[in-house]
Length: 127
Image (tube, rainbow, N blue to C red; front, side, top):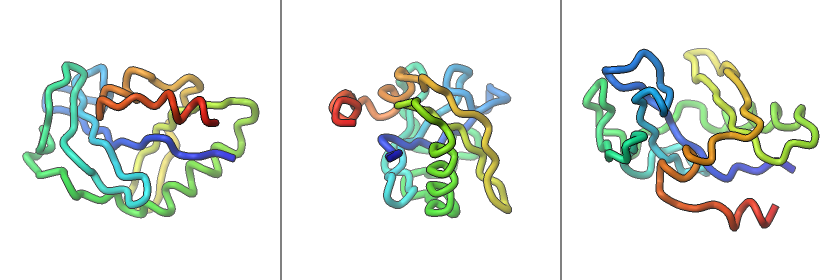
């Protein structure tokens, strides 16, 4: 049964054309239950970002639109992948739904821990 072990909102920086973490983007950890940004974000250099770097918008408390539906969308995709224990899903939130960008079979362990500086080995071992 698929479960969520981490969720983050990625945002591009003014110096980058993408939201990619390795290309200057910033990631904000999300509360899995609510889809709300729970604290400051980080970039790859571990710089903390309280505001969206492109819009100067305070991010703490921001809620990803249609979070419950988004989680269901990802869970349905996960059901299609047999035999893979860990997938990093990249999903775009659109005005009228979602678009699956890709599923990364090994995900990014760097990203997984760099955003909120928390290890998740105990979660992976429990599964």
